[in-house]
Image (cartoon, rainbow, N blue to C red; front, top):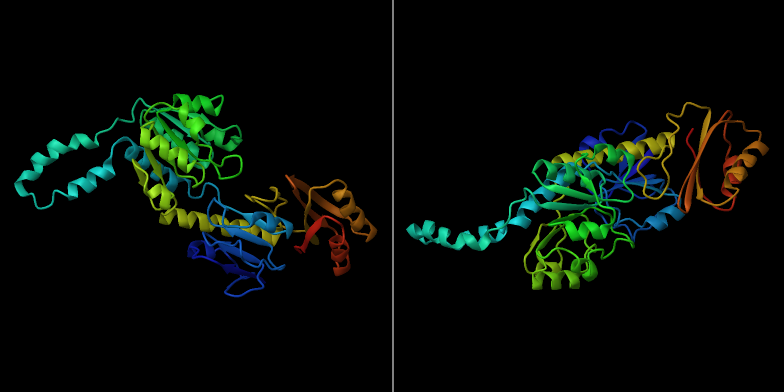
Length: 387
Protein backbone atom coordinates (compact mmCIF):
# COMPACT_ATOMS: atom_id res chain seq x y z
CA UNK A 1 0.00 0.00 0.00
CA UNK A 2 1.19 3.50 -0.85
CA UNK A 3 1.13 6.10 1.90
CA UNK A 4 0.30 9.65 0.79
CA UNK A 5 0.76 12.79 2.88
CA UNK A 6 -1.06 16.06 2.16
CA UNK A 7 0.75 19.27 3.15
CA UNK A 8 -2.23 21.49 2.31
CA UNK A 9 -5.96 20.98 2.04
CA UNK A 10 -6.54 19.00 -1.15
CA UNK A 11 -10.09 18.88 -2.48
CA UNK A 12 -11.94 15.68 -1.59
CA UNK A 13 -12.97 15.12 -5.21
CA UNK A 14 -9.31 14.54 -5.95
CA UNK A 15 -8.52 12.44 -2.88
CA UNK A 16 -11.54 10.22 -3.54
CA UNK A 17 -9.85 9.02 -6.75
CA UNK A 18 -7.35 7.02 -4.71
CA UNK A 19 -8.23 3.32 -4.54
CA UNK A 20 -7.51 0.74 -1.83
CA UNK A 21 -3.81 0.74 -2.80
CA UNK A 22 -3.46 4.18 -1.22
CA UNK A 23 -3.80 5.55 2.28
CA UNK A 24 -3.82 9.22 3.30
CA UNK A 25 -1.67 9.58 6.42
CA UNK A 26 -0.29 12.32 8.63
CA UNK A 27 3.12 10.85 9.30
CA UNK A 28 6.59 10.49 7.84
CA UNK A 29 7.92 7.56 5.79
CA UNK A 30 5.49 8.13 2.92
CA UNK A 31 5.78 7.34 -0.78
CA UNK A 32 3.90 10.36 -2.09
CA UNK A 33 3.18 13.97 -1.16
CA UNK A 34 0.39 16.26 -2.34
CA UNK A 35 1.01 19.98 -1.88
CA UNK A 36 -0.35 23.35 -2.91
CA UNK A 37 1.50 26.36 -1.45
CA UNK A 38 3.37 24.85 1.51
CA UNK A 39 7.08 25.69 1.32
CA UNK A 40 9.13 22.49 1.16
CA UNK A 41 12.68 23.84 0.79
CA UNK A 42 13.60 23.16 4.43
CA UNK A 43 11.85 19.80 4.61
CA UNK A 44 13.71 16.55 5.03
CA UNK A 45 12.98 14.54 1.89
CA UNK A 46 13.07 10.91 2.98
CA UNK A 47 14.35 8.18 0.69
CA UNK A 48 10.90 6.57 0.70
CA UNK A 49 9.37 9.48 -1.24
CA UNK A 50 8.74 8.59 -4.88
CA UNK A 51 6.75 11.57 -6.10
CA UNK A 52 5.37 14.98 -5.20
CA UNK A 53 2.15 16.21 -6.77
CA UNK A 54 1.73 19.98 -6.85
CA UNK A 55 -1.95 20.96 -7.16
CA UNK A 56 -1.18 24.04 -9.24
CA UNK A 57 1.23 25.21 -11.90
CA UNK A 58 4.04 27.00 -10.05
CA UNK A 59 6.65 24.91 -8.23
CA UNK A 60 8.77 27.63 -6.59
CA UNK A 61 7.86 26.19 -3.20
CA UNK A 62 9.45 22.81 -4.03
CA UNK A 63 13.24 22.11 -4.06
CA UNK A 64 13.31 20.75 -7.61
CA UNK A 65 17.07 20.12 -7.87
CA UNK A 66 17.13 18.26 -4.56
CA UNK A 67 14.16 16.15 -5.65
CA UNK A 68 15.82 15.27 -8.96
CA UNK A 69 18.97 14.11 -7.23
CA UNK A 70 16.93 11.81 -5.00
CA UNK A 71 14.88 10.43 -7.90
CA UNK A 72 11.68 12.12 -6.75
CA UNK A 73 9.40 13.00 -9.66
CA UNK A 74 7.68 16.36 -9.20
CA UNK A 75 4.35 16.81 -10.98
CA UNK A 76 2.37 19.99 -11.50
CA UNK A 77 -1.05 20.61 -13.03
CA UNK A 78 -0.68 23.04 -15.95
CA UNK A 79 -3.97 24.22 -17.33
CA UNK A 80 -6.11 22.93 -14.47
CA UNK A 81 -6.63 26.44 -13.11
CA UNK A 82 -6.25 28.22 -16.46
CA UNK A 83 -9.85 29.39 -16.77
CA UNK A 84 -9.92 30.77 -13.23
CA UNK A 85 -6.73 32.77 -13.85
CA UNK A 86 -7.95 33.89 -17.28
CA UNK A 87 -11.12 35.36 -15.79
CA UNK A 88 -9.14 37.36 -13.23
CA UNK A 89 -6.75 38.60 -15.93
CA UNK A 90 -9.74 39.89 -17.88
CA UNK A 91 -10.91 41.70 -14.76
CA UNK A 92 -7.36 43.09 -14.52
CA UNK A 93 -7.66 44.51 -18.04
CA UNK A 94 -10.74 46.49 -17.02
CA UNK A 95 -9.06 47.66 -13.81
CA UNK A 96 -6.03 48.74 -15.83
CA UNK A 97 -8.18 50.85 -18.17
CA UNK A 98 -10.32 52.77 -15.72
CA UNK A 99 -9.50 53.56 -12.11
CA UNK A 100 -12.40 51.46 -10.86
CA UNK A 101 -10.74 50.72 -7.51
CA UNK A 102 -9.96 54.39 -6.88
CA UNK A 103 -13.46 55.40 -7.97
CA UNK A 104 -15.11 52.96 -5.56
CA UNK A 105 -12.97 54.18 -2.67
CA UNK A 106 -13.73 57.80 -3.55
CA UNK A 107 -17.47 57.08 -3.76
CA UNK A 108 -17.37 55.79 -0.18
CA UNK A 109 -16.11 59.21 0.98
CA UNK A 110 -19.39 60.75 -0.17
CA UNK A 111 -21.26 58.98 2.61
CA UNK A 112 -23.27 61.51 4.60
CA UNK A 113 -23.45 64.11 1.82
CA UNK A 114 -27.15 63.41 1.30
CA UNK A 115 -28.79 65.10 -1.64
CA UNK A 116 -25.42 66.49 -2.78
CA UNK A 117 -24.12 63.05 -3.78
CA UNK A 118 -25.42 62.94 -7.40
CA UNK A 119 -23.96 66.36 -8.11
CA UNK A 120 -20.61 65.46 -6.50
CA UNK A 121 -20.50 62.21 -8.49
CA UNK A 122 -20.94 64.06 -11.77
CA UNK A 123 -18.27 66.58 -10.81
CA UNK A 124 -15.71 63.97 -9.68
CA UNK A 125 -16.14 61.06 -12.05
CA UNK A 126 -13.74 62.43 -14.68
CA UNK A 127 -10.85 61.79 -12.29
CA UNK A 128 -11.34 58.07 -12.79
CA UNK A 129 -11.99 57.88 -16.53
CA UNK A 130 -9.95 55.72 -18.87
CA UNK A 131 -9.82 54.18 -22.37
CA UNK A 132 -11.92 51.36 -23.74
CA UNK A 133 -10.29 48.03 -24.56
CA UNK A 134 -11.90 47.68 -27.99
CA UNK A 135 -9.41 48.53 -30.73
CA UNK A 136 -6.39 48.56 -28.42
CA UNK A 137 -3.44 46.19 -28.76
CA UNK A 138 -2.82 43.56 -26.09
CA UNK A 139 0.59 41.94 -25.97
CA UNK A 140 0.51 38.44 -24.48
CA UNK A 141 3.90 37.11 -23.36
CA UNK A 142 3.69 33.33 -22.96
CA UNK A 143 1.10 31.29 -24.84
CA UNK A 144 0.59 28.36 -22.57
CA UNK A 145 -2.78 27.25 -21.22
CA UNK A 146 -3.56 30.61 -19.59
CA UNK A 147 -2.00 32.84 -22.24
CA UNK A 148 -4.01 31.19 -25.02
CA UNK A 149 -7.29 31.67 -23.15
CA UNK A 150 -6.44 35.31 -22.40
CA UNK A 151 -5.50 35.99 -26.03
CA UNK A 152 -8.65 34.40 -27.41
CA UNK A 153 -10.93 36.18 -24.93
CA UNK A 154 -9.28 39.53 -25.60
CA UNK A 155 -10.00 39.03 -29.31
CA UNK A 156 -13.67 38.53 -28.49
CA UNK A 157 -13.62 41.92 -26.75
CA UNK A 158 -12.46 43.57 -29.95
CA UNK A 159 -8.80 43.92 -29.05
CA UNK A 160 -5.92 43.40 -31.45
CA UNK A 161 -3.76 40.68 -29.89
CA UNK A 162 -0.05 40.21 -30.40
CA UNK A 163 1.43 37.03 -28.93
CA UNK A 164 5.00 36.04 -28.19
CA UNK A 165 6.20 32.59 -27.18
CA UNK A 166 9.23 30.99 -28.85
CA UNK A 167 8.45 27.70 -27.07
CA UNK A 168 4.73 27.39 -27.81
CA UNK A 169 3.53 23.80 -27.71
CA UNK A 170 1.62 22.11 -30.51
CA UNK A 171 -1.41 21.78 -28.21
CA UNK A 172 -1.38 25.52 -27.40
CA UNK A 173 -0.92 26.41 -31.06
CA UNK A 174 -4.02 24.35 -31.96
CA UNK A 175 -6.06 26.22 -29.35
CA UNK A 176 -4.90 29.73 -30.28
CA UNK A 177 -7.20 31.85 -32.44
CA UNK A 178 -5.88 32.32 -35.98
CA UNK A 179 -6.54 36.05 -35.61
CA UNK A 180 -3.88 36.39 -32.89
CA UNK A 181 -0.82 37.90 -34.52
CA UNK A 182 2.67 36.59 -33.89
CA UNK A 183 5.43 38.89 -32.65
CA UNK A 184 8.77 37.94 -34.19
CA UNK A 185 10.57 39.03 -31.03
CA UNK A 186 9.66 40.35 -27.62
CA UNK A 187 10.83 43.89 -28.36
CA UNK A 188 8.31 44.11 -31.20
CA UNK A 189 5.57 43.28 -28.71
CA UNK A 190 6.83 45.86 -26.23
CA UNK A 191 6.85 48.58 -28.89
CA UNK A 192 3.35 47.91 -30.26
CA UNK A 193 1.27 46.95 -27.21
CA UNK A 194 -1.07 49.30 -25.32
CA UNK A 195 -1.52 46.58 -22.70
CA UNK A 196 0.98 43.87 -21.77
CA UNK A 197 0.14 40.71 -19.84
CA UNK A 198 2.79 38.22 -18.70
CA UNK A 199 2.21 34.46 -18.54
CA UNK A 200 5.62 32.85 -18.14
CA UNK A 201 7.25 30.97 -15.24
CA UNK A 202 9.81 32.67 -13.04
CA UNK A 203 13.27 31.38 -13.84
CA UNK A 204 16.71 32.83 -14.43
CA UNK A 205 15.89 33.67 -18.05
CA UNK A 206 12.68 35.52 -17.17
CA UNK A 207 13.69 37.18 -13.91
CA UNK A 208 13.16 40.98 -14.14
CA UNK A 209 12.17 40.64 -17.81
CA UNK A 210 10.23 43.90 -17.40
CA UNK A 211 13.09 46.31 -16.73
CA UNK A 212 14.24 49.82 -17.56
CA UNK A 213 15.52 48.94 -21.04
CA UNK A 214 12.27 47.22 -21.98
CA UNK A 215 10.08 49.91 -20.41
CA UNK A 216 11.91 52.57 -22.42
CA UNK A 217 10.80 51.03 -25.73
CA UNK A 218 7.17 50.64 -24.65
CA UNK A 219 4.44 53.07 -25.59
CA UNK A 220 3.84 56.02 -23.29
CA UNK A 221 0.96 55.16 -20.97
CA UNK A 222 1.37 51.41 -21.32
CA UNK A 223 -0.60 49.25 -18.89
CA UNK A 224 1.10 46.12 -17.50
CA UNK A 225 -0.53 43.05 -15.94
CA UNK A 226 1.38 40.43 -13.97
CA UNK A 227 -0.65 37.39 -12.97
CA UNK A 228 2.27 34.96 -13.24
CA UNK A 229 4.90 35.52 -10.56
CA UNK A 230 6.50 38.25 -8.50
CA UNK A 231 10.04 38.79 -9.70
CA UNK A 232 9.20 39.06 -13.40
CA UNK A 233 9.31 42.85 -13.07
CA UNK A 234 12.23 44.87 -11.72
CA UNK A 235 10.76 46.75 -8.74
CA UNK A 236 12.90 49.87 -9.02
CA UNK A 237 12.44 50.22 -12.78
CA UNK A 238 8.71 49.59 -12.46
CA UNK A 239 8.39 52.27 -9.78
CA UNK A 240 10.29 54.79 -11.90
CA UNK A 241 8.06 54.04 -14.89
CA UNK A 242 4.93 54.53 -12.80
CA UNK A 243 6.17 57.77 -11.25
CA UNK A 244 7.00 59.40 -14.59
CA UNK A 245 3.81 58.19 -16.27
CA UNK A 246 5.49 55.94 -18.82
CA UNK A 247 3.47 53.15 -17.22
CA UNK A 248 -0.13 54.27 -16.71
CA UNK A 249 -1.10 51.40 -14.46
CA UNK A 250 0.28 48.15 -13.05
CA UNK A 251 -2.03 45.31 -12.02
CA UNK A 252 -0.54 42.39 -10.10
CA UNK A 253 -1.77 39.31 -8.28
CA UNK A 254 1.34 39.27 -6.07
CA UNK A 255 1.35 41.94 -3.35
CA UNK A 256 4.40 42.62 -1.21
CA UNK A 257 5.63 45.62 0.77
CA UNK A 258 7.26 47.55 -2.05
CA UNK A 259 4.57 47.07 -4.68
CA UNK A 260 1.77 47.93 -2.22
CA UNK A 261 3.10 51.47 -2.02
CA UNK A 262 3.60 52.04 -5.75
CA UNK A 263 1.42 54.69 -7.41
CA UNK A 264 -1.21 53.71 -9.99
CA UNK A 265 -0.97 50.10 -8.91
CA UNK A 266 -3.72 47.61 -8.09
CA UNK A 267 -2.65 44.70 -5.90
CA UNK A 268 -4.93 41.66 -5.89
CA UNK A 269 -4.18 39.14 -3.09
CA UNK A 270 -3.20 36.15 -5.29
CA UNK A 271 -6.73 35.24 -6.31
CA UNK A 272 -5.84 33.85 -9.75
CA UNK A 273 -6.66 30.22 -9.02
CA UNK A 274 -8.91 30.89 -6.03
CA UNK A 275 -12.08 29.38 -7.41
CA UNK A 276 -13.72 26.15 -6.28
CA UNK A 277 -13.54 24.87 -9.85
CA UNK A 278 -9.77 25.44 -10.02
CA UNK A 279 -9.17 23.72 -6.71
CA UNK A 280 -11.15 20.68 -7.83
CA UNK A 281 -9.44 20.54 -11.24
CA UNK A 282 -5.96 20.84 -9.72
CA UNK A 283 -6.65 18.20 -7.08
CA UNK A 284 -8.09 15.73 -9.60
CA UNK A 285 -5.21 16.23 -12.04
CA UNK A 286 -2.52 15.95 -9.34
CA UNK A 287 -4.01 12.77 -7.88
CA UNK A 288 -4.43 11.10 -11.29
CA UNK A 289 -0.80 11.81 -12.20
CA UNK A 290 0.54 10.66 -8.84
CA UNK A 291 -1.59 7.53 -8.91
CA UNK A 292 -0.53 6.59 -12.46
CA UNK A 293 3.14 7.03 -11.55
CA UNK A 294 2.87 4.92 -8.41
CA UNK A 295 0.89 2.09 -9.99
CA UNK A 296 2.25 2.05 -13.54
CA UNK A 297 5.42 4.12 -13.55
CA UNK A 298 4.04 6.57 -16.12
CA UNK A 299 5.06 10.24 -16.00
CA UNK A 300 2.77 13.06 -17.14
CA UNK A 301 3.43 16.77 -16.49
CA UNK A 302 6.62 16.42 -14.51
CA UNK A 303 8.81 19.49 -14.14
CA UNK A 304 12.03 17.57 -13.54
CA UNK A 305 11.74 14.19 -15.30
CA UNK A 306 10.61 13.44 -18.89
CA UNK A 307 7.16 12.41 -20.09
CA UNK A 308 6.94 8.63 -20.26
CA UNK A 309 3.95 6.36 -20.81
CA UNK A 310 3.86 2.57 -21.24
CA UNK A 311 0.22 2.20 -20.29
CA UNK A 312 -1.17 -0.06 -17.59
CA UNK A 313 1.31 -2.51 -16.14
CA UNK A 314 0.17 -5.96 -17.30
CA UNK A 315 3.56 -7.64 -17.55
CA UNK A 316 5.16 -10.07 -15.11
CA UNK A 317 7.34 -7.28 -13.86
CA UNK A 318 7.98 -3.58 -14.52
CA UNK A 319 11.06 -1.67 -13.39
CA UNK A 320 11.25 2.13 -13.18
CA UNK A 321 14.72 3.67 -13.14
CA UNK A 322 15.41 7.35 -12.42
CA UNK A 323 18.91 8.28 -13.49
CA UNK A 324 21.26 10.95 -14.78
CA UNK A 325 21.21 11.68 -18.49
CA UNK A 326 24.68 10.33 -19.26
CA UNK A 327 26.15 8.09 -22.01
CA UNK A 328 25.96 4.27 -21.83
CA UNK A 329 23.22 4.29 -19.17
CA UNK A 330 20.72 2.29 -21.21
CA UNK A 331 23.32 -0.30 -22.21
CA UNK A 332 24.43 -0.62 -18.58
CA UNK A 333 20.84 -1.23 -17.49
CA UNK A 334 20.02 -3.75 -20.23
CA UNK A 335 23.28 -5.66 -19.83
CA UNK A 336 22.64 -5.93 -16.07
CA UNK A 337 19.26 -7.47 -16.76
CA UNK A 338 20.68 -9.75 -19.45
CA UNK A 339 23.35 -11.02 -17.08
CA UNK A 340 20.56 -12.05 -14.73
CA UNK A 341 18.70 -13.83 -17.56
CA UNK A 342 15.83 -11.35 -17.70
CA UNK A 343 14.21 -10.91 -21.10
CA UNK A 344 12.94 -7.42 -21.89
CA UNK A 345 9.37 -7.42 -23.25
CA UNK A 346 9.13 -3.65 -23.70
CA UNK A 347 11.20 -0.61 -22.80
CA UNK A 348 11.14 3.15 -23.08
CA UNK A 349 13.89 5.64 -22.26
CA UNK A 350 13.34 9.39 -22.16
CA UNK A 351 15.50 12.31 -21.10
CA UNK A 352 14.91 15.87 -19.91
CA UNK A 353 17.98 18.06 -19.56
CA UNK A 354 20.22 16.51 -16.87
CA UNK A 355 17.84 13.71 -15.93
CA UNK A 356 16.41 10.64 -17.62
CA UNK A 357 13.92 7.88 -16.95
CA UNK A 358 13.80 4.29 -18.12
CA UNK A 359 10.74 2.07 -17.84
CA UNK A 360 11.15 -1.65 -18.57
CA UNK A 361 8.71 -4.55 -18.75
CA UNK A 362 10.36 -7.93 -18.18
CA UNK A 363 9.17 -11.50 -18.63
CA UNK A 364 10.16 -12.96 -15.28
CA UNK A 365 10.24 -12.06 -11.61
CA UNK A 366 12.44 -9.18 -10.46
CA UNK A 367 14.52 -10.18 -7.45
CA UNK A 368 16.04 -7.95 -4.79
CA UNK A 369 19.47 -8.92 -6.11
CA UNK A 370 18.61 -7.47 -9.53
CA UNK A 371 17.35 -4.25 -7.95
CA UNK A 372 20.56 -3.88 -5.95
CA UNK A 373 22.68 -4.50 -9.07
CA UNK A 374 20.81 -1.71 -10.87
CA UNK A 375 21.19 0.63 -7.91
CA UNK A 376 24.94 0.09 -7.95
CA UNK A 377 25.26 1.51 -11.49
CA UNK A 378 26.83 4.96 -11.35
CA UNK A 379 24.29 7.67 -12.18
CA UNK A 380 21.18 5.75 -11.08
CA UNK A 381 19.39 7.53 -8.22
CA UNK A 382 16.27 5.40 -7.73
CA UNK A 383 15.01 1.97 -8.79
CA UNK A 384 11.40 0.92 -8.27
CA UNK A 385 9.71 -2.38 -8.93
CA UNK A 386 6.19 -1.53 -10.09
CA UNK A 387 5.08 -5.16 -10.20
